[in-house]
Length: 81
Ligand SMILES: [Zn+2]
Image (tube, rainbow, N blue to C red):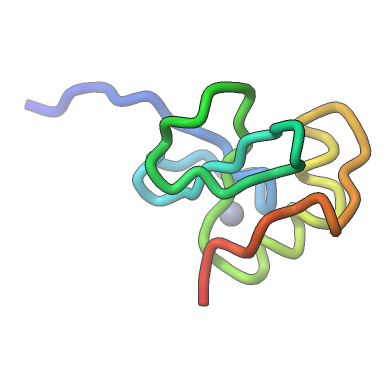
């Protein structure tokens, strides 16, 4: 039997996926941080660990998700590499 699981939308490619296939970023007072353990409180944005998705996130995906401009120097490391 399959249980329904919550899905998240990648801010890079906008495809819906299982949270296990995505990485979570949280907006904090220090900018966007990669939330490895998914324990950081606050509003999160999800992105695939894929350079194309990361590029899309930097090009407006994060800003759209958080409804505010996000400068590149406010963003933690990429979710890959
Ligand atoms: Zn994606």
